[in-house]
Image (cartoon, rainbow, N blue to C red):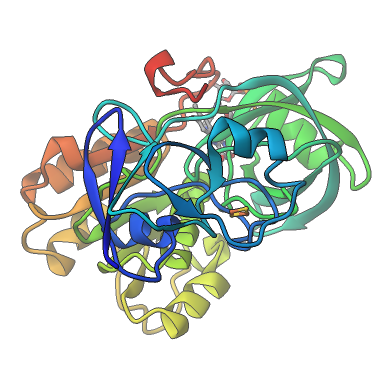
Length: 351
Ligand SMILES: Cc1cc2nc3c(=O)[nH]c(=O)nc-3n(C[C@H](O)[C@H](O)[C@H](O)COP(=O)(O)OP(=O)(O)OC[C@H]3O[C@@H](n4cnc5c(N)ncnc54)[C@H](O)[C@@H]3O)c2cc1C
Ligand code: FES
């Protein structure tokens, strides 16, 4: 039996094919729901069912307690509608994803510090308590006041994982207090406290267009998280990353680019080199605004994500506007020095 899933409070409706879970039906229609295990074990997709009936399937009590079941909650990765209409609490008035309220102090262990370029290290953090819940594209504040490193914003470079690990790409800034501390003092095995998640640079749940991502340097971090999440959930439209590097030394994630290219027909990556140290035979040279018109003639039907230094973001925004991009579909994350953390607006927070 095919069913309709109604999203409250927006009233939007999604078709659910016979045999599909609610999560699968939402994803097929372009809506993003948090999920980690897709097997009824983690509780990440817990949602209130406000009307209609579901077959919950077999799930762990740990993920959905008997009390929560009585209150009407279900795990959407396993739940299948058994009535013609099932209403669930999902998203805001305009069906945008609800964001998780930021927490002040969450403890992590540093499990790895990997040099990724001469200027950028990847810091891997594992939660010592509960996982930090976030949407791909958001960032955390990391620092250690006692060590003279004031909390600074760092975008999470991976989509949420069952083990809660966070990957940060942190560039050394000359005379930078916190980036210097990360590069020179922080060690594997240290305990750190982060705050977050912050920001609204997240994928729009209903994106139904090709996606173009533009990044340079550690601006690649939120782009990697967004792309990782989109490809994992089978986003049906083309996803292109254009990354600007001075030379081969600046290439950060070419391994993941290669993997995604082999695994996902719709993924494409382009590296453009702006300095003298470009590899022989480099296909693209010059800044993104210079190469973009050669790659795309019309961006009016694209959703665009841009991340990096404020100057990079401004230049790319102007360039995509010239190619017809709709400003409502251009999302930017400028790495402003010492910018205060941006808490998501209250109407977009869960709970
Ligand atoms: C939303 C957001 C997300 C961010 N995500 C990341 C990320 O994922 N990875 C990352 O590496 N950084 C990121 N940043 C930048 C980061 O928060 C810090 O600003 C950066 O690490 C510098 O901090 P610092 O304490 O080392 O330098 P500070 O001690 O604050 O600054 C030292 C000097 O360098 C100047 N300066 C600061 N930043 C820069 C810069 N980028 N380029 C040139 N000069 C600078 C300052 O004006 C000052 O004169 C992000 C910023 C924002 C707002
Ligand atoms: S995604 Fe883990 S319980 Fe649904």
